[in-house]
Length: 371
Image 1: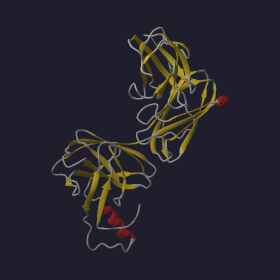
Image 2 (image 1 turned 90 degrees about the vertical axis):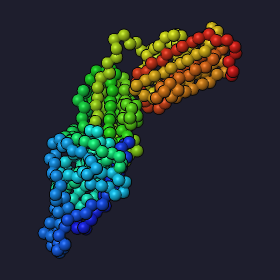
Image 3 (image 1 turned 180 degrees about the horizontal axis):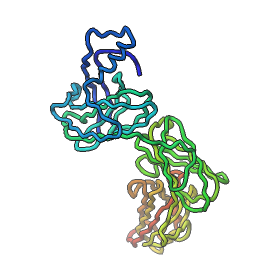
Image 4 (image 1 turned 135 degrees about the vertical axis):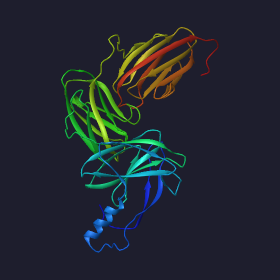
């Protein structure tokens, strides 16, 4: 930590998510006027006085507090805040979470009152042992109420081997992490990477040139590769989508158990009024739809594993859809003439994979379609 000794500091903390921000906040420090930074002892005394008088909390304990109209005032936006001091050790990865009725953020500062980070759930790696300041702030001038502040030391795995049904927590810092695993029995498996702090991205490589990658198939910027894996050695690379992410992530390898009555059909005839399940692994799947009369046709393709994409061609018609069924699911609705049509089911990304459901609804209609 730096060793300067100014008499006042301006705190600026940007909050996370929908909470808002802790704007500029002036703090007046009670440093004796005769104190000067002429010696190391004087400097150390000045630093300790910056956090003097604040309530001390211990890492791992639960603190209950409240932001009221009597709390310290943020002169910039009128919000109120409470401050605490906490001792942290070098190389610790700590998590501090804010819960309760208060809408706000928690921010962490070093003993020079330099902002290290702020969020509703804050995770921070500590570079030097010492005292730090926690600030709990309302989101705006109307934010008051009780809160609970919980802190803990995160225990991260340093292994580079991923085991089946054994999730691991690790830390990404503007780079990528490589892990290996072995598939003993051919089958369907999920590889999930989840983080609250950055956009997760997975790359999977395996036997016989196998290659898959994924960005957001697990939802909320989390990554998932769901696929049929043959026996062999695999390498999974965990990184952020844009190469600049930093924070905690969880990586897990789990077998995919399909319902006992689920049969996969990756080609064939589509039957009006019925649904089928298929498995997409990067290669487009084609089906045929035959109409005996002019009909209103609706095709739905849904998946919880990947972003679906539908195409329909035939009789001078060429249609496609990405998200027409809502979310990342696809829908094509069209009045079609009698004849045979080709329906192509695939992922929006050719590197995606997973289980999907394709349903067909057909109703006879009058009149001629507008082509």
